[in-house]
Length: 439
Image: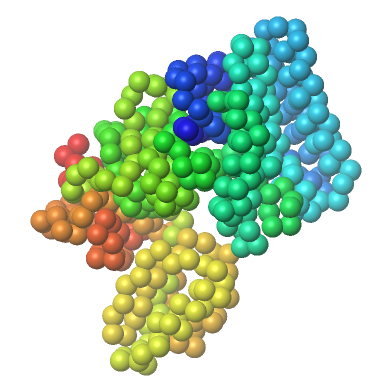
C-alpha cells in the first residue's frame, strides 16, 4: 500500500485538486492519500483563534466571513454538477456554522484545537466530493478515528496501527482512502494536532503503521536541494539521501520536509519520496536506508538560535558539571542543538527563548553566563563526511571571512555544524555553494 501526502499549495486551488486526483489514480496500487488544509487556511484559523482569545469577537467574525467567502468561491471551479455543488456548499455551511457558534463560547486551548482542525476537515471533504463527481471509488477515512497522541504529546504508534488496521479491514473492498493530515486526538480523547508540519508526520506514521511500499510527500519543489533555493541562485535537487542525512537536513532547516517525518519511516524501513505536484515527472528525492554515495550532499540553515556560554574556573577537572548544566535545560524541556566544551567553559545553543530568563538564572551559580541571540546554525550534511579528505580545510578556506562562533564536528558522521551570526547566514550559504559544490 502506498501513502501519498499533498501539502497546502498542492490543494490550494481547484485546478490543483484536479491535478492531485490525476496523480492518485495513475496506478492501481492501494493507497492512502493524506491532505493538508488549503494554503492559507491554517494561518487564517490561527488569526481567528487569536482574535477570540483576545476577546475581539468582531475581528474574529470578519475573518470567519472572509475565509468562508474564499471557500464559497472555490466550489464552482472545483465541481460542475448541481448535485456536487450543493453537497460541497453544505459542507462549507456546516463548518462555518461551527466557527460562528464558537464566537459565543469561552475560549480555551481545547477550543483552539477544534478551530485549527477545520482546515483539513474541509479540504478532504471537498476533495471527496470532487472524486465522487468524477467517479473515483474511494472512502473518506477520518483521521480522528485512528490518529492519536499520548500524554506526552507523542504519537501512539501501536494504537494508531491497531485502529487503522481495523478501519482498513472493515473496508477491504476499497483501494483508495482519503484522510486528514495534522489532526489527531490526544490522551483525553479531545481533538488535537501534530503541530506545524504535522501532515508530513501523519503520512509517515500511516506508512509505518501499514508497512507501506513508499511514503510520497508531494509539494511545490522538485525534491530536496543541495542548498536553499530561496536565497542561492544555483541549486541542485538531490536524487538520493539516507534517512540519517535527511533527518539532519530537515532538523537543521531544510523546509521541504518536517524533521518528525523521518523516524517512523526509518524505523519501519519505508522509503520516502519528495516529489513536485507541479512537475510530476521530475525525479525528486528518494530517502532510504542506503545513502547512495559518500561526501557532502547539502547544506541547510536554522535560524532563531540562541548561544549560551557558561564559564567557570571551578569547572576545571570537575566531574558532574555538565550533568548539572544539562539538568537545567531538561527541567524546562528545552532541547540543545550544539555543544562545545573547554576546560573552563561550555557553550550550548537552543532554538527557543520560552524559558530563557529562568534558565539563565539557574545557570548563574555555576559561573559567568553569556548569551548571544540572533544566531544561525549552518549544517553541512553528507554520508560519512567526517571521513572525507580535506573537508574541513575546504570548509574553513571557503568561510575565511565569516565570523564562526561555534563548530560541532565528530558528533555525527553525517554532519558538520557551524554557528554564525544570523546577519552572515545568506553569505555563508552562498559561499558554501561556490566553495563546496562549485556552483
